[in-house]
Image (cartoon, rainbow over all chains, first blue to last red; front, side, top):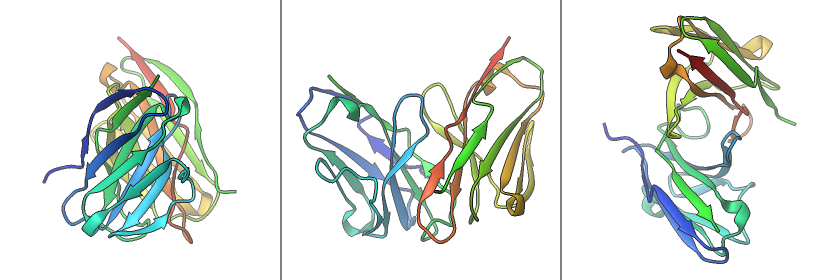
Length: 115
Length: 109
């Protein structure tokens, strides 16, 4: 069974530029998560989708971050314009169950450096 | 508010030693996961353990949900065990899964 796929693995941009990350969850998984992990900290949930609907985006900085999950499968996370403090690893995870009752599986992450 | 606390924050072991990592949480939970984040940043699933005890080789985990804690045991540690260990806790009554700050483990050869 293929795992969670993410791209790109690494991205370097200058502040005020834009960037997009892509995630393909494990086939059949209903719930998809985007987490932000700043160096030295634990992952922080940005947004959670159940199928193609948002169930939690309370910690997503909506003035600059956006995310969508078209057709309930792939998802993209966009940052525009980027700030220095957005430098982090962006982790995508998926789980089979709805809500927060299922086991999470993570991709390898997308490491963003904002200069 | 909802809290997940891990201890110790940092741990240095000699190869072959045993260790216990702890995760305390502040409210009722649906389940609990332990992850190992390797030096390349990949989060590796170790245990999915809402309650009871599970074992996988040199690692085992115990969750006592009624007392709001979980323990991860590492026996006969190896240098490849180095990295950061996270517990992740999805709280009942909400959708959010919250991570602890992690325990950073270094195993010396």
